[in-house]
Length: 318
Image: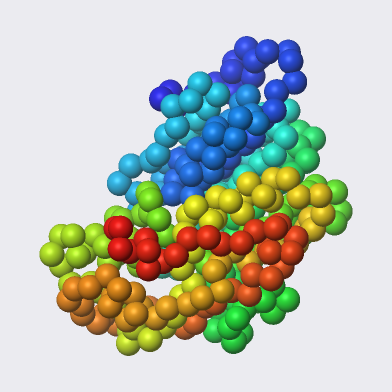
């Protein structure tokens, strides 16, 4: 796998034939790398351009697809001038690059704002100026906070509890405005607690399923934050990828937000019991919601999306 550094050299060497081209920001990360794989396997694309600065601290290593149609640029989406040319002739953009851990964003709000808000604006503007038709934006159920009662619907007010959710919701608003003012076909997908192959494992802020499985494998006690009664809607990466693929082809519903969850929730204590093993409690963290469960009726209706994976089945095979 080769990371390309000279954008213009690559673009000028491309064939004069119009290519079916996708841009994926954050394409070497957990979710992004799976989307890249799906795009390659779809057979619909001749060129897939990945923008990823390889900074995700929760990954032991980035994930690269070695297909000949995939190229990687280790660029920062916070720098508009360096990324803008990569959107030339793009048909669709999957925007996943983000500072995606709540506690890390809380510790460094400036970095989170630069990446999640300014970076998103840069991606939208680059897509607009390049004449790209569609941007699919990966967002978060953290937007719902604590004041909304599950099942959580897209029409509920935002209740941001931390800098991460603030910066991601700002990105959602930018997507809405770019659709309303400029006609860019934006689609926002709000993910609920994603798990599965390649999930982050490193650091104390790694998502809970990957963290628990790693702790059990290493003979450590699973660390439950607070009382463990908080509930989460755990969504498999395969279902997340399918939602993105469907969003690529819809003919309506632009400028909108769609919940991507399962409509079911489990407590952290339930999760520990399903995995099996010893555990300990650690203090609660600030800025985290107590309960999440998605209302997915909108995604079913507009995207034609239905989750297929089962958490219990996954844990049996893990």
